[in-house]
Amino acid sequence: MPSLGADMESGKLVHWLVKPGSVVRKGDVVAVVETHKGAFEIEVFEEGVISELCAKEGEELPVGAPLARLAKLGEAPPAAPPKAPEAAPKVIQVSAPAPVVETERATETPASPSVTQPASRLRVTPVARRRAGELGIGLDALKGTGIDGSVTLADVHLAIAKGVSSKAPSPAAVPTARRKGFDPDEMRQAIAAAMSRSKREIPHYYLTSTIDMSRSLAWLETFNKQHKPEERLLPAVLLLKATALALRKNPQLNGFWENGRFRPSDGIHIGWAISLRGGGLIAPAIHEVDNHSLPSLMGALHDLVGRARRGGIRGSEMMDPTFTITSLGDRGAESALGVIYPPQVAILGFGRVFKRPWVVDEQVTARPLLTASLAADHRASDGHVGGLFLAAVDRFLQEPETL
Image 1 (tube, rainbow, N blue to C red):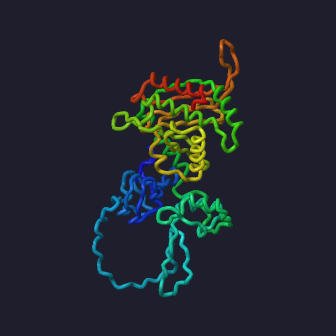
Image 2 (tube, rainbow, N blue to C red; image 1 turned 60 degrees about the vertical axis):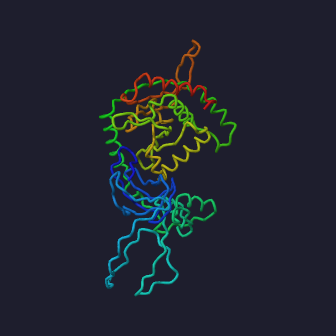
Image 3 (cartoon, one colour; image 1 turned 90 degrees about the vertical axis):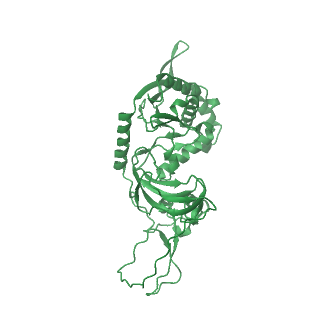
């Protein structure tokens, strides 16, 4: 069971997308796990063959508990225990059939009273099931391309692109008003617990800097005028890229505090704080931000926010943010003083861009200004490093064409 954040102690295995004997590659989604922050697709990080499923669907497991065992390709699976002699079958009368978790494709031949015909089960991820219900698409119209033919969210979107018509969803396909296991109040409590731990254990220091955004916003306006609406950029991507390049120059702020020491990260994976429509907050990572172009970064940010609000975030995006940005955008506050999310060692808050008096060439003029606020762990860095970092962010935003 992976740790999908410092505030996670356990998770529920909702759905397996593999079975013993399935061949998996690095990056394949093998299961769906539900936490207080929602349902997440869990990836595998090595290739091999699933030799054993150690956890059952619906089981609540602590972080670190084994979910499955993976054998190397070509490695003989462990010998199965000998089967016990079969007992004589017992006849049991029931008043109604037991509920089946997975959607069943009904066979064409009706079952006789004395013989139960096996049904072909269609494996559907919870995210895909919910999205299909929202769009009114029958599950029988979907073709699964996931592991062992499972239907994924991408298959739902592919069906829409191919012109599969939506219809009124059947009662079984209509999603419930709130997913079982996701409760905004519970999420708030978990966030509060993680932040309380952070304030107790991490010696925070805070620095703020005011950044003149004139050049960045002027460049952005020119860029957007020259591109189609779907290719235009938001100011957020400039903040992301400038922060990533500043972290490249100040790696003491990019990494984790573990086992009493700082461990720098090889990559710059920035967690972007996203407010969820149902309540709560998550900060999944955009990977290798410093290596993205601005258009690529815009696409990645748009995709991340969309999936976060639909419930399609992958476990890996919650496991490895090396630094976090919280940006209030145009929501009114001038600054945001963040609380470090352990085991990270820093968080950067951006407030709203305000027009205020500013001195330029000995003249007072109105300029669009942005307050950047850094909270950092004094065990891993000090104010000198933090100051250099904020100065680097400012410098990169003064040269937006170089981003």
